[in-house]
Length: 69
Image (tube, rainbow, N blue to C red; front, side, top):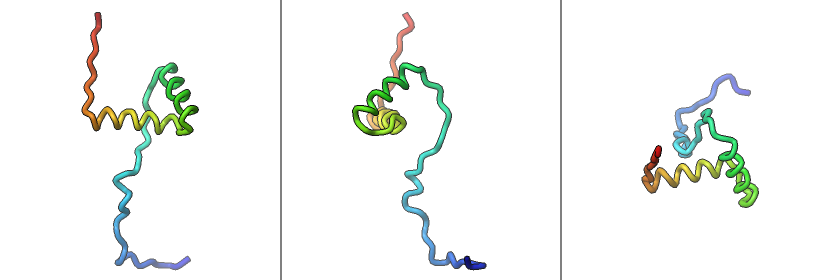
């Protein structure tokens, strides 16, 4: 290992904006089970499916409409 490295010709990571941030979120068991079942069918991790679903909501500007009748 070198004592010093030269970073003068370095450039920013072009993928840094696409990095994911780990958070804690509380979801109901049946919601997790649903996405895990979908994950088994698609072969994709359930966390990725949840992220894709939420990203789709964001892209399509879906808004939540609830009625507490």
